[in-house]
Image 1 (cartoon, rainbow, N blue to C red):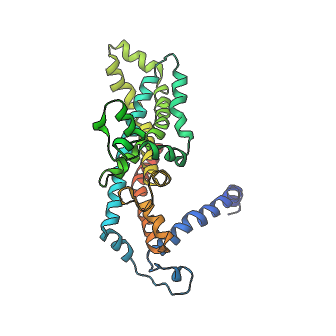
Image 2 (image 1 turned 180 degrees about the vertical axis):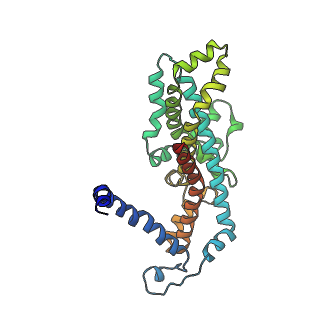
Image 3 (image 1 turned 30 degrees about the horizontal axis):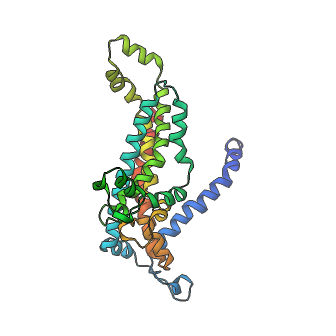
Length: 300
């Protein structure tokens, strides 16, 4: 026993502050949030302790999914995530594929594509709010004005003010801002492929297309998985960009993160916590299988 204590005691003592902080401020607060989501804490009086709080089980979750407004928020989240994910992955891959070869000014273009990532979502949202202005005709501005000037009036549209697909317009600045990050991931993957594999493929008579399809692309699987998880995770939590471009009360661009903010602002802590738990569950569905896959790969 004393031998095990001498062996494992110092390492455990070293990491114990981090374990305590993670246990209290992450898992402890997650448990508190889950408990709050199962109560009837829907008013300021209950939040301030002037009225009692009782446990209602899954009633808040059932009530949320029974409302058309929350189902619309979930649909918006699905559309936003799909557009953000596909757009960032495709644009990031194309830029990385073009810059993977030594080109004049390649470093400059890498810096230009990565620059938007250094800007906060709030700052870029303010600019994109003007670019995505929904005014058309004589009062048009932003992109609608640009389309008008170049004779492409048919491309003018209400952007994020469209009731059904307005959330897709919000995905444009998200793709613009994060595709450079995906490009950096793919570039690292491309340059991590040994030159010996490329030369061996060429000596075997493989064309450039065959070399990419059969040799290089299979080597990029870990990069693709990492990019998918990171972008999907960020899209599910998107809040500041949407709030900077739209307004909290705008039905057309509401997502669960905005609903959570609105519930909390009106002292409806129970529904706010329920929305947070739903988002946590969605993120877990995406992240946990990836972590299990990574663990199994490391054990081989």
